[in-house]
Every structure is written in C-alpha cells, then in structure tokens.
Length: 254
Image (cartoon, rainbow, N blue to C red; front, side):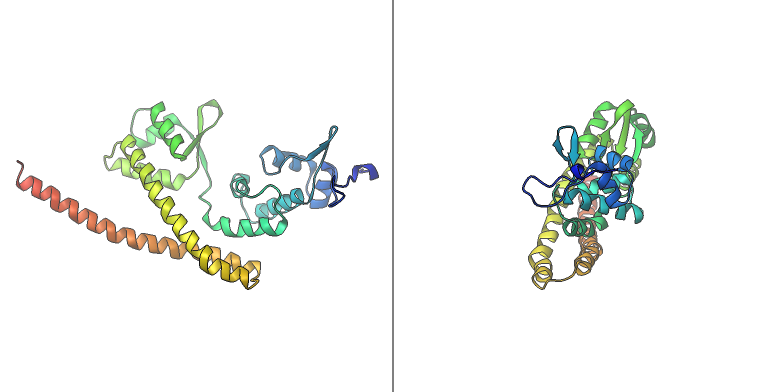
C-alpha cells in the first residue's frame, strides 16, 4: 500500500506524481502491465529519486490512451506505432487528437516471416542482399533468430504479384524506393493543404475533437480516390506511349 512519502510532488511543486503502484491503481491496470508497456517504449522513463520512479500526468495520459486503444481492438504493435511520433510529455487531449488523426492511416497489422519464406513466396533463391534492400526501404525489420517483421503486408503482397509478372525482385525494390519518394511528396502536399485550410479553420473556431477526428477520417478516402484517379490517367498514357514505342521498334528493328 502506498504511503504518504510515496506521493511525491514534482520538483517544481506542480503536478502530483505517482509511484508505479499508485499509477497502476489510478489508471485501473496492473503493475505488471505498466512495466510491460514501459518495456515496449509506450511510456517515457519516470523521474528517479534513488531507486524509486515517479510518474506524472503524461504517463497517465499515455496509459489511458493505451487502455482505450486496446478496447478498440488495436494490438500493442499498432499502439506502439501510434505513440512513436507523439511528444513524450503530451497531455490527454493532445494524445487523443494524435490518435484521432493518425489511426485511420495506420497500415495493416505487421506479420513475421523469414528470409527463406520470403524467397519461397517470390520464387527466387534466398538472398541476404535482397533482405538488406527491403530493410533499407523500411518494408521489413530484422528481429532475433533470423526472423523478419513485415511492416506493411499488403505492400509486400502487391510486390510479390509484380514479381510473378516476371520483374526481378531487385529491380522492383529499386523502383519502389523511387515511387516511395514521389508518394511521400504527394502525401505531404495533401496534408499541408488541409493544415493550411480546413485544419486552421476548425482550430480557429474552437471545434470539438469529434470534428477534428471526422476531418482526418474523411481525408483518407478522398485523397486516395484523387491520387488513384490521377494515377489511372497517367498509367493509361504511359502504357499507350510504351506500346506505341515498342510496336514501332518491332516494325523497324534497325
């Protein structure tokens, strides 16, 4: 049971701090879960006084969000990705906003595999160099015992389908790295457009969190549709140009 000495004030005499037992009781989870979440990097380190750690408002906010996301069906891996870019001292409101805006864009649940399994699926010999390229691309992450974590299985499946068309994996990976640069620029352009217009209008009007959450949720499909429509148009033009060029080359092989 916590004692009065455990209820340590912050160094500046401001917010109250909690021991790990108090923190767990305050949020409504077990101490074991608090330690497990901290080990995964979901919590910033506590303030240490001797061998005792003290947790503040930011720790409470993070644990409440973790509990909420678990209740919504998110895995710890997806929660970890959500919190990875959030400020370590963010308030409950800031974390809730962060979650509301980021959650619709999270990729599917990652999967684990091996280099041998990836090679078998692609129908090519196992290659450390190819795995290195996938790691550099950010598609996979090396784990212990030779296992790999695939961060976006849907992108991997699409890539394997392209390999089935006869494209060598190393050429596809190089092309995907270039495509990612263009996609990143497109994504930043759309996001900045929203920030400069609709976002600032909502914030300036003091809109509730639900309105901001709705804005983020609506942005995903409309932006995806716009990019896909433009891609279809440009793809059709590129295919037509390539077909005409190759037919001309076949007709006049000089």
